Length: 228
Ligand code: DX5
Ligand code: ZN
Image (cartoon, rainbow, N blue to C red; front, side, top):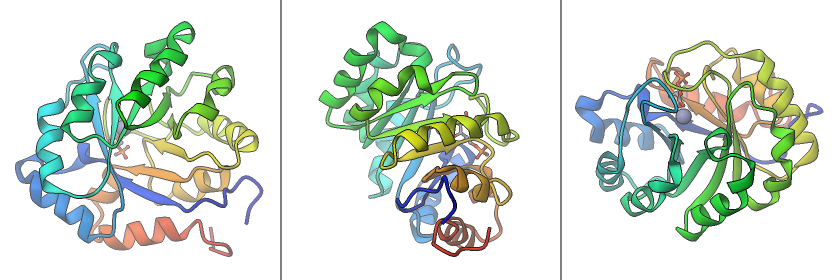
């Protein structure tokens, strides 16, 4: 095992943003058939990021079409206003951006997500230093590093974020570290070596000719002795 690697299993989360929404139910079934154990859902409000995507109404429809846990990524200026709605719609994990909350409200925000019964995630934009937020990490279920500027699928991985992943893994050996943006055949081995465990994959999964093989390969990159 490489220095920064975690002993936690590697999990690929297909990001539904890259799915064909004319066939959403079938796409969800395709993820499950390909071996996905968890799915990633991107919520964008047109303020926190310059794009609009889905709300609780669509999450509720997804909930009826799959039994897989739904990991909901709130790219919103006011995420706390909507956490109960997303939880009721079927979110199993709710990830909020630290930039949207700010330091004074963070303890309360984590508590409010926790109170819904969902797992709690904290997300970081590429320019945000996670070390300022380390004191909250014992109270969350995962942290997520944006390896692109959030808002759109299909962007190029930002290598500078690798340092934040390594610094976090060094301090928190047991914490699931999720990465989101530009995670593909080239970057999977890099982020796993840094200590990431949860790999959000939009284009790399949905546009692959064999998504099931991609998923098995990526999750296998975490095995002891895997070539990387
Ligand atoms: C971008 C979203 C991502 C997106 C990743 O802001 O948060 O989840 O779907 O897409 P890829 O994997 O194509 O970069
Ligand atoms: Zn996302």
